[in-house]
Length: 332
Image (tube, rainbow, N blue to C red; front, side):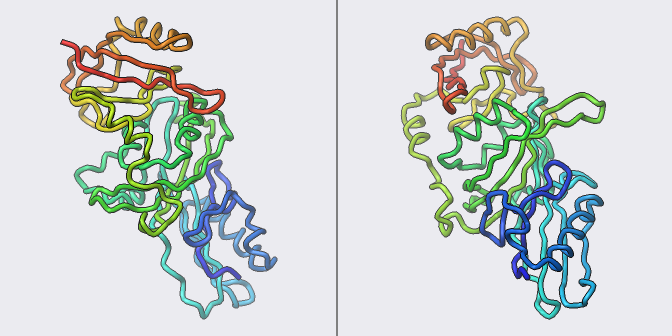
């Protein structure tokens, strides 16, 4: 029997594989690799199916009266679980406290990030700042990415259903505490409420301890970003841009002020001025041959337009995927 909480993903709608045993990440392994006793595994699988299907916790005792079985879904919306944490242990053994964890997804079609209440609790977000949705770039503002960031961003750019990713990144909570965040995710294709096809990156994040105590957690500043920030002149802002969609992937350093990029409630949607889209697309195409430079207008948070000068070289995310490393300055 297992005497630690197991975390199993159900990103595709059914109980899947184990992604953590206690606070130790596991690389999408079958439940049979962890729970070897057939009776215990049968109890676990039954509880997992019920919790995933109903979105409600399951707590029961095995048929022979020897085991306690608990399955607790991590919900992103009522009735929609991203993962289930599982406990199977002797009845006389107390159930351990589980790590903080929460569900999230990126709508890669609509460029929206949606976070569960549990995830906002994990981040230490104050009640007045709990906008449930924001642009995908906003999800990176509190994350210190590990050496796998280029691989992760390439997967976002390619948006291929079935693609998975798992890593430990450092989370800077809103109280400035640094926590080691284990996350696992999968890209899936699903219809939205209107039946339109969307590509989603469904994931779950688990707090596995203080960042300074977890060797897999990256330091608060990755060297490459420190070099980029040191080379940034006053009034310059750097960003990684998806060349296919012309959307911001993430800021490197502080975001450009006054520009509507976060897609928060009460703010305009991020947008390039319609008259400047042809210029932006030409700049994106030109990056295949050389560095590019041009001027476009971006939507401001006050509803107006900010004229921005953009310089960009091509950057490789992996062997087959590229993005633009844009330097933005306000134009007079």
